[in-house]
Amino acid sequence: MNFDEFTGTVQHRLELPGTGETVRTIRATLMTLGQRLPEGNAEDLAASLPMEIKWYMTGAVDDHGQRFDWSEFVDRVSEIERSEPVDAAYHARVVIDLVHTLVPESDFRQLREALPESEDDENWRKLFEVVDQGGWGEGRESQTGGGPQS
Image 1 (cartoon, rainbow, N blue to C red):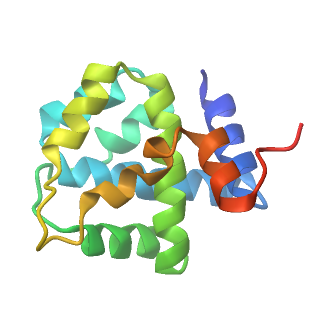
Image 2: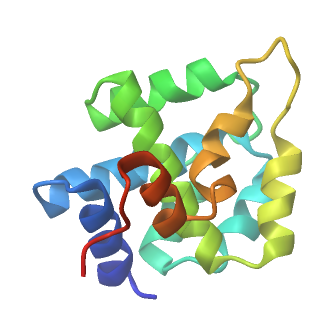
């Protein structure tokens, strides 16, 4: 998948009006995730992504391995994306689902293991809700009663 296909897929799934908003959404999610992950984990996860997308997790991040919870993640994504936190959280889930389809399972498992799953955290598992519901097609059906229209 190349940059245009990646951004087009995200734009379609999120029904965003333009490429600018779509790129900002992708950048917000992946740059913030890159800030949270240790540098090696971010590089491993990004290695299978299009070069321009990979850069958001690696080159655009000055300080990897920051410690912040799910709520702070959503706030940061929301600020960069210029959206409401509830929208930013959903957008992040959809971007992560697409990333899941492109990276080796071992790298995706490493992502899950790098994020805490304690009860006192607001639970990073929320980031994987679309993936855990079976991915875009299955998750969409359970949320709306139908899959993507062809």
